[in-house]
Image 1 (cartoon, rainbow over the protein chains, first blue to last red):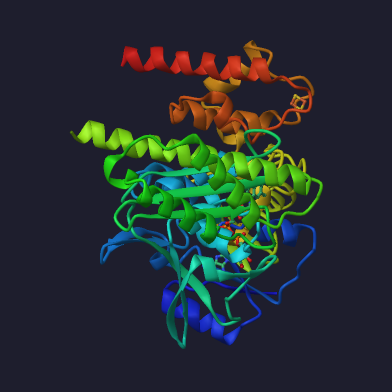
Image 2: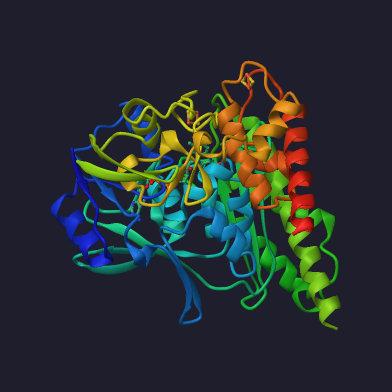
Length: 293
Length: 154
Ligand SMILES: Cc1cc2nc3c(=O)[nH]c(=O)nc-3n(C[C@H](O)[C@H](O)[C@H](O)COP(=O)(O)OP(=O)(O)OC[C@H]3O[C@@H](n4cnc5c(N)ncnc54)[C@H](O)[C@@H]3O)c2cc1C
Ligand code: FES
Ligand code: FES
């Protein structure tokens, strides 16, 4: 087996172009499980840990550019204010040991329907920046996943970063599992209020073949808030509206029965998480106004 | 392929297959058997070591990707005396069979060094089949207060 260890992004892309069947390895917390149990025996491994361009984040042209190789522990400690939903999701990933190594780039690369970054990134309207020797392209997270553990990545491509506009309003993330730590989500939900555009962001995890947004539910909630003048008045979110939003989020999912939970349980959990996260975020939006005044 | 690891302050040269984990390199090649193989899939924490001062799972770390210093439970004692966290584990009876202990101790050392607020959360990646959890938490608390009083003295 070949071991490729590029030391720059340009070199990494050349390696991937020359060895399209090489498996990239960032934190290794997904790849290693497959290697240790011989579920996968790739002809080559492509170590991304020495590529400095992937290892940092910066504000770039008004957006946060989070390098694909930044571990969760840094998302939590450094990006709570710029990527609040993602930082909340990151806190729920695995254990401290997993969060010291695991990355958002690896979460996207694995493209699991249960990846915890995905609902938060969907709700924040984030994009994935993808590179190859052919050039760079940007794909909205909502279009990135194409099936169970499948994405739009071509064999010669690598993820360089996630691009996210800093929040104009509160974000929330909620996850249900069998214990608080070290669990793959039974289902998860990401929520974001975007008062600058008077829109709502949503992300469903572990309740469909891919992570997916709930665009109809989001448009419904944003429209009702608009009709009632609530974006400007910052009045209370009517409980009936939050409940109806939860129902519509539930209808956007397509869960299955598996060892972690039944489809019916997942649907119910989603409607509750959607109602609660919307309420928490709206309450925070109202508080923002009060503390600003 | 040839790699160099810095383990517990010593530089070691190895020739390995690229697929070898840090855990196998330590245990099978270097005879450093403190880190244990409980599951080989990231779920138990028995293989916890420090890479660059942070606890990671040696079973999910590819040896060839490691360039920073590695510390295992063997590297904790100084001048023939146990590390304060090891001392606290002994005094609080924080183990039964001991299989999870080296991993627990490595997470506990990081918890004390980083002065974490929520010990149980920080230790959540280390399972103990003997369920010594209350005593493990007590040991971490003891080591933390030992450190605080030592810090206050200097
Ligand atoms: C015990 C345990 C608990 C876990 N708990 C959770 C959890 O709670 N929530 C959760 O979401 N996940 C969890 N995971 C899964 C895993 O930790 C995450 O998916 C993590 O984000 C993977 O990141 P990594 O850097 O370790 O990826 P790696 O294992 O290095 O890579 C994962 C995949 O992405 C590809 N890849 C990596 N980087 C790139 C890149 N730059 N461009 C293109 N492809 C790339 C790799 O080829 C591979 O296919 C858990 C795993 C374990 C072992
Ligand atoms: S052996 Fe590494 S976590 Fe179990
Ligand atoms: S002491 Fe036996 S597993 Fe923890």
